[in-house]
Image (cartoon, rainbow, N blue to C red):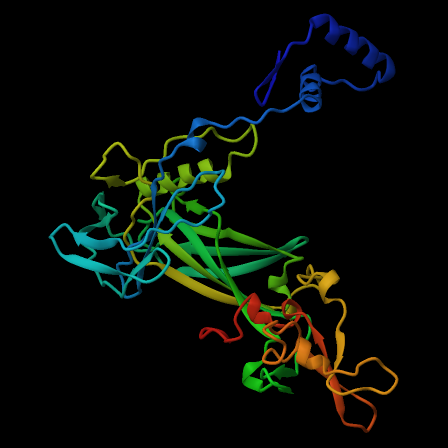
Length: 425
């Protein structure tokens, strides 16, 4: 019997034996295990989707992300609600909640709502000898985490990179000279420079096309991203508390991130044993369930509880401690001559349109084309259909028009920001 995604197939022993005889007659040098035939049969048969009851559950659960920073850096906590796998909504932030950090001596530190489900506090500078918990009040329900000790991360020794055939591997190394930490987690923030397909030297002020000022360039921008996987490390089985060259991420050689200049800020968190086990289980349940050889789903033991409805689970684990971080930069000159994937579709950006603001002898341009495509105050509300790129003129003659291209091909601020980050160098 072979089982495949809800389908059960019965295969007779005689069929297998006859198939084996024929196979040996044709390929006498190849010995395959009979299990291969079951795999082959399962691949050829139909697959029926299975929708477990959890997908259809009408209940959503609170998700708590973040670390209570015990030092001088700010604390950020993100609150959201789970969504159904079939839902078109992917982000479901919890708004207007009340969050406070509490000590085991009844000291209270409020957090302020910032935006889109994020709550923050300036540096708390907590007493490392005390324990702390997080209290959350939202939608008539109250949540409370367990008291946990302060576990400060040791410094990151180095953030390094190795050039691989398929990209750049980013690594972190650390050690605890007191031999007390043993359990670690890392996250990261990436920032990189990218360019638009065309360098626009002109712009429309709505009425006419003028030279683009230097402080309004839209050719070079910065984009950012955050880690989307759980990166963990442990030295518990070692005689010394040392983590050497732990892989944090791999940036593909075809990525636009490596096209000009790339930077990564690695954040390192020290964990208790319970917190480490929580993140291990969460990683297994969210990242390692793609094949029959991966671990089976298991219960995730959070340290946050719904006080109003104790039977309702909460997803998250509150930790307290100072976070260590380190940043590095990588330029294209430090890398092989890789060719990144072009983010601009050829069907839209492989040409520029020639537009004129004055009639041109021998052409049909007897109207001001720039008013139609560039000058949005004169085109009856059609908007800026194209962005001017270069000037057009006959040799020695006046400017008679401009080339233009679609905004997605010219304006880098549609995918990033043209304001240089404060940390950039």
